Amino acid sequence: MTTERTPSDQELLYQAREDSKAFAVLYERYVDRIYAYFYYRTGNREDAEELTARFFHRLIERVHLFEDRGVPVSAWLYRIAHNMLANWLRDRSRRSEVSLEGLLSFHSNGERPEDQVLLQEEHERLLAEVRRLPPERQQLLYLKFVEGLSNAEIGRIMGRTEGAVKSLYHRTLIALRRRMNE
Image 1 (spheres, rainbow, N blue to C red):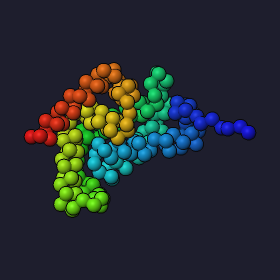
Image 2: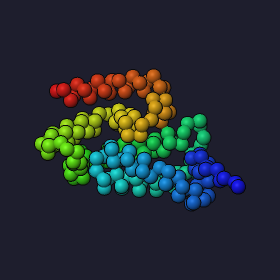
Image 3: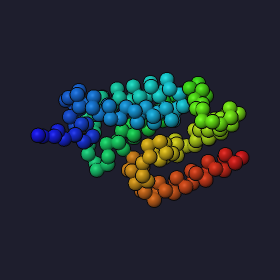
C-alpha cells in the first residue's frame, strides 16, 4: 500500500505554472485564510470577497514570479495580499463601513440582551480603533490573533526580526489600551 505524499506549498506554486489542478489545490489551502485577512481588515463581506477574487486572479498572473528565498509561501502570499489591500485602501477615499452581519451577529449565551448590546458596542469600538492603526500594526494583530501565528512566523511574513515583532506588538497593545481608555 502506497500513500500519496501531499505536495508542499512551494511545490504547488512551481507546479501551478503549468498545471491548473495544482493551482486549485493551492487555492483550497489559502482561500479561507486570504478571505479572512481581507474581511478582518475591511469589515465588509462584499469587499473581502472582491479582494479575495482579485488576489487569486493576480496570483494566477504572478505565480511564475515566485522564487524560493527561504521564507514560507504564506509570507509571499500575505505580502501580495497586504500590497493589494494597501492599494485598495488608498484608491478608496471612504472609510470602511461596519457590516450589517457584524451588527446582527448576536449569539444567545444566557446574557441579557442589554449586556449583549454593550458587548457588541465594545467589540465594534475595538475594531474601529484597530482600523485606525497604521496598516502594518493591523496586519500584525490579524496574523497574531486571527491566524494564530508565532512572532517568528509573523516576522518572516512582515520582513522583521522576531524581536522587532515583539516590540511592535507591545507598542500596539499599549496604544490600543490607551485609545480604549480615552
